[in-house]
Amino acid sequence: MVYRVAKKRDIKPNGTPQSDCFSDKEADDGSSYYMSVYFSDEMQLAGKSVTDLQQEWGSEYTVLAFSAADLREQGERLWRDSNDEFPGHGACKRADDAERTRGQKRKLAKIAKIAPELP
Amino acid sequence: MTLLAESERTTPNSTDVAIASANGSGTLPKQIRISRPGPDASVSTLLGRGERPPAWVERLVLEEIPTKDDYGLISLDTLARFAQACSTLPDRTPKPYYGVGDDATIGAEWDLGRFHVEIQVGNNSAVDSIVFEVDEGEPKELPLEGNVRTLAALMSRLLRD
View 1 (tube, rainbow over the protein chains, first blue to last red):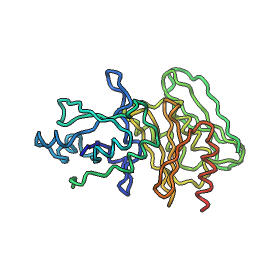
View 2: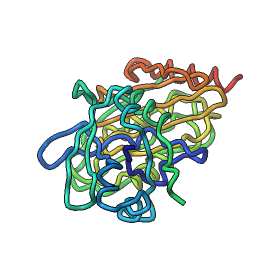
View 3: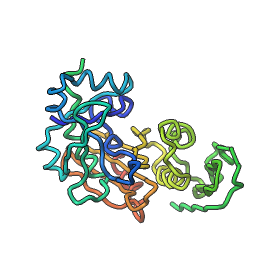
View 4: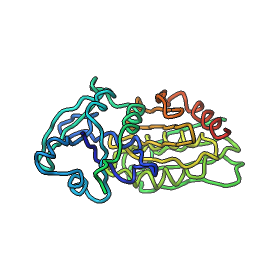
């Protein structure tokens, strides 16, 4: 699984995330159009759970789950990009490096589910 | 429906976020004025005589969206274009779900029974768009620029059903 952390305020009452959840700021190194994700396999190797990920970000955040295959099917490219903050960090962006359109964000919103492991 | 927009320079240190003119009679043009500190332009959105935007637009634009702009990314021009698009909607349009993307975009979404409508306005106006979907099917996307009237007509049609 691949996880995306999102603000709870951007989740609609029916559990569907708003399309605004699927972008990140330009990075300090100038890279853009990507968004941070977390890979479940590396999290598990480090003994971390989805609940740990949510707690790392804080109570105003929740965690959305995708399969890597679903993301690729939507035209996303995934890669690992570990950092010191939490295990399993990675990123994804459009396979053609283009800026994600609103329609593409909407498609991600439709396949994203709040991680079932969360209470 | 006639929609006019004007952009004008404002004093660099202005701190006002104010509605310069608003009246509830529906007989005079309504103006939403947004200004921020710094070099951004102050933009007024003017509606034609007798036209009223949905009641939620002013508060959404002037208060609620800035509250969600965690990184202060949204430019004044972006906010004004968003206000302009929303101001063309029928006044009975429900308040949307709204958000600010970390890619400096403002989004608004409406779930209207079988239909789903979204708009996005961003600092990069090339990604300004309308998304329309029926029965959870494939989202149809078109540029917002040049289609603001289409958005208003679409919403009017959906709200009539």
